[in-house]
Amino acid sequence: IGKWQIDVFSNDKTEPKTLTLESVLHNATRTTGRHTRCFVVLDPESKEQLLVKDAWAEETRRPEFIEANSDCSAAKVTMAFERDEIKLLQKVDEKLGKTNRFQRRYPVIKYGGVVRQKLANNLRGAMETTYTALLNIGPVVQSDEVPYRIHKRMAVTPIAESLRNLRSMDEYIVVMAEAMLTLCYIEKECGILHRDISSNNIMFTRDEDGTVRGFLNDFDCAIEVTAERKPRTNMTGTLPFMSICNLESKNVDQTILDDIESCIYHMCWFGVEGVCSLHEDYPTDNDMAHLGRWRIGTVKQIAKTKRNNMHTDDIFRAEVTSCFIGAAQCEDHGDEHGNCLYKNLGYDRLASLVCQLRKALFENDKLSRKCWGSTKQKKISAQPSTRVARMHVNDEFGHAFSKICKVHRSSKPTDTPNVGSGAAADKGYEDPSCGPDPFANRALGDCKEIIVGEIMEIMLNERNIALENIEKQTQHKK
Image (cartoon, rainbow, N blue to C red; front, side):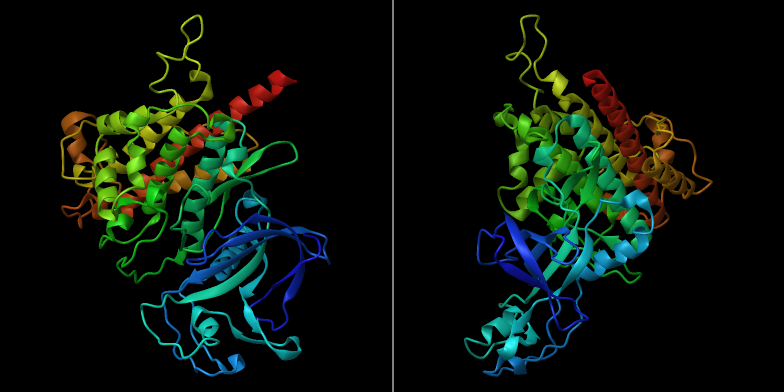
């Protein structure tokens, strides 16, 4: 540390950028897979601290040809990357970097590219892939049994923190809201889907005044949304947080709704595990912890569990939010006055929030029942939504998304009837292309826009309530 150096390449330059290693944030736990490692480094020129991510990213496209030769410099690889985290992050920054609204909410590339093999006289040759690396051993057989990975390295700013370093439920809600809103904005304005929401890929940064910002990390699985979408042929993501369609590789277009669904699972997971290190030791009802089934068993079993958990509000409350910290412990963990020791932690608020989000996604009362549920169709009563997002006057980030919510609301066809409860809910908006699959129906254009608008309003409202609470707590401490 302090004496080692690391080279970071740029795809358009031969000579790498040499940075000084300061600390190791994350070391690879195995030699297979992406083998991701993260380092804190110092740029000797700018004196700026950067985060270097070093990983072997999987590429679905194979190289057009590889010339197997004992001299690695003769190995030739010509291809176009289907998934290129560096290119996508550069596109995001080109779109969003011109405004202060999204500062410190996504990684900004300083340097980055494919790592190239070191040759004699310190020259650089072929890019490092699983194929070129194996050339040192012998002839490479091009086969689907050999995963094709490309060694990439990039230096980014800022250096975000793990959610375990948050200080309260209010901060967690702010971070999740901002990460989800940024997620939706990047999809809408940049045409990029993240596709790998997990406990490690939503992080936060903290300003000098203590304000937290939601940070969307790791675009390694991200793709550009194109007009000609291909059916999802493989699973992408982290099992406990993957959407049902991803787990089942359903022949349904992958949309922002998959990422939103993953965010709901993220909040449920942290509702059981604890949103920060201060809450990790609080007990949950392990006998009821169905969330453990989101990562144990076959992919088919995990998908079935989630389908059942998410289908109705009653089932969701009974099998998911009942497992949250404080939900089942109040009888055994009260003070001398009988007050539950867990209520002030805010997990009841988180449970209420995820119930709202589940309803907006799986039982949206603005949509026909053909868009409802996660298993077979079932009659469910609906209640009209009267939510209005509350804004701080000087909140540029919040106001921007308030406008986007209005855009999503206005995308609903003008002939959509007002939806009340009971039988009237059958008259919710129905796309002419709707079929028997609620997942496919929700992914259709207008249906998707209605759901996204509702989700964004919920998160904006909760974010601003949390900001008010944080402000009150800060004033109280003073």
